[in-house]
Length: 458
Image 1 (spheres, rainbow, N blue to C red):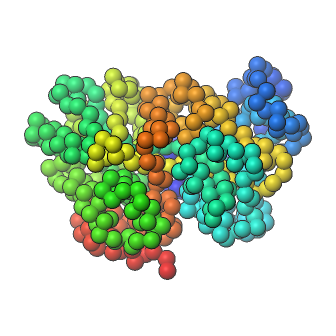
Image 2: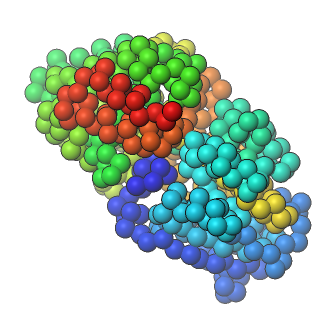
């Protein structure tokens, strides 16, 4: 499972979808002309697209790991650009994206645009193919500086040069719960880490037959990745953002004492049989519980708390209302204090391998509020952007709106998913596997971190 799909929480339907290649034709205001279907509109205001010029007869190729059914939402979001400029977008989605993109670059057959799912992957592409990847043009730089926080811009920057701007985004620092259960029991949303632990213990006291937390890290070949998110979130809370950056960049060893302390804090929940695994079994059941099913005991009261990203909303039964006054919802995973607001998340980045005017224009469009708003409009729910020009009224899901508020609030300190920034041998291999052994085999904290540190490429 590649990094983009594992992080964005693709559903079973998406996993079943095959890679596809779709060629879009320009729109002239009618769906009868072979255009992008309901993504286009005869009433599109093309004023914002005038600077892109007339691109009739031009084609831009896009390569990504976003496959069917999510691919259609991407395709529909390009319709205004095609309609207003006359360009055609040739879209190719592949589940083998991360393996095949380097092959294509090596063979001299790069796409015009690729959606890179991790900053670490972007950095390796820039280092290995410096003459192939193209720095962002000025229009993209301007959009990046105007519509994104400095942190997001930095994640698309390598050695001082901006190469990529964010596409979609997600927020991982959430705890899912039942608003009804909280109201019935008089529980309040915790605003500090100590409050969260006090709530955990209160739930256990009030419901002695229930473990308050439920968790699951089973994810096929990617089993273990939800546990890495736990550690990353807690490192931000116990050690702080600066130490987190040093850890991710291997400026301190993976088994640094500060990381050991953070893992112990994670273990105070995930390895405590009094606190976990409600509705599923003992601590070891976390390793075999599918990550996308792990929170399902919450509506039945078999557990009360589950840490997972905003994209977990796609895994709730359609009969459940996901809202602050609904059947299930999520609150921000608190920091040490109310003023300490670390935020863990992820996303994808738009990277170019050609500098033709039409490619630069499309790259600028993808970094603009016009694209973000169109994408939100055609998606419905389950997608958001860190672009502060996005109209939050277009976000139909309450959890998406909350996520957008957090992403664009400067009082929160955002950090990108740590394992997605680490070398593949660590972030997508040893880290997953050792966290799984930590739970399934009760491997010690020290051995777990030592084994991951030993896997770091020399």
